[in-house]
Length: 206
Image 1 (tube, rainbow, N blue to C red):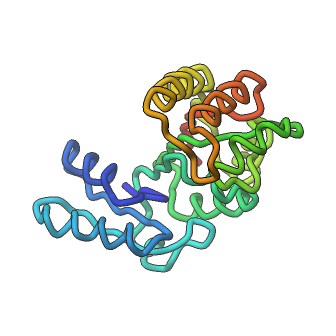
Image 2 (cartoon, helix red, strand yellow):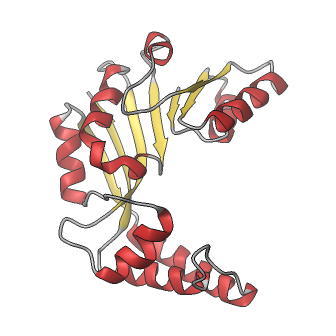
Image 3 (tube, rainbow, N blue to C red):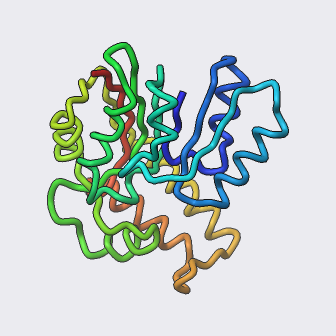
């Protein structure tokens, strides 16, 4: 298993512990990789490895350890959607026709988003570009990935933001820019309702 944008390695650890599979994670942040390697050292009964690198250009160590039976990414590609075509091509490098790629991603709109979405979603989450559902699927197809299953998770996403807005309001939390966090969450829920942003779950093969 290969996790792209693996963070501190918790998902890789859970998968390895539950399945017995070797699970390797890659992340751009050196401190996340260090935390992942600490997790690996603390669990010598598991085959865990963590690499520093970018999914826009996979490092040789990650490519050489493949191909992988499963490649996964959890809300990580959205931070570099302007390079989504290259990312999908990199995923294909470490797959064979017998392998699968599963991804959960944050999406934008196939049209220009509302200024409120730019202010309360893009700005807060540091998004430069978010691909809409149609463009997102076209990039995957152009890279040679075959879509096996696709789910739109917008309704679940909106419910979560409504719940988080209520909690943030009760706690009086403020965003780093001084805006009450509940306002940003409420506006994100509204952006989802406008279909300015959304979330998906997709399964691919070659």
